[in-house]
Image (tube, rainbow, N blue to C red; front, side, top):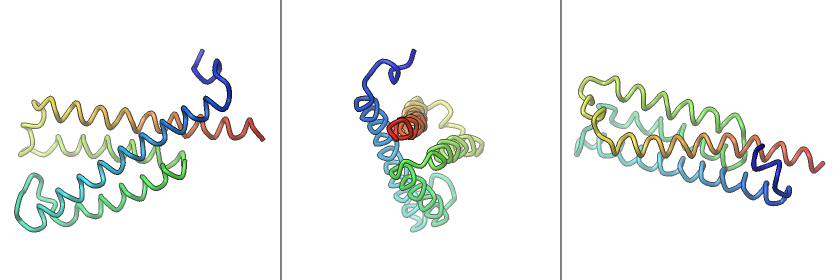
Length: 135
């Protein structure tokens, strides 16, 4: 039995909205970190992955999906999780970044952000289900 079957509809909707809120806040964190790394690499000040200013394209996609999550779009939440997970997998495939595979901080941060995106998916689906039930 899920939490949405036990609680009143108004409480369930608040829970769903809080899950959505956490997901778009996680999207903002990922977007701003991507912008920061891209600007540092583009100026040549610091280099982690040789993406340079092309990372700004990723940031635009991330911010677009984050706006979709903010607007409670189910497709945007799913695409954000897919984009985030595929980006982490591709990042670990880079030979010069093998050291990240031993960094526990990388995993903890990635897992927690992925968790928030997964909760966002659950929140958007629950929100739309509850909104449909109210009509």
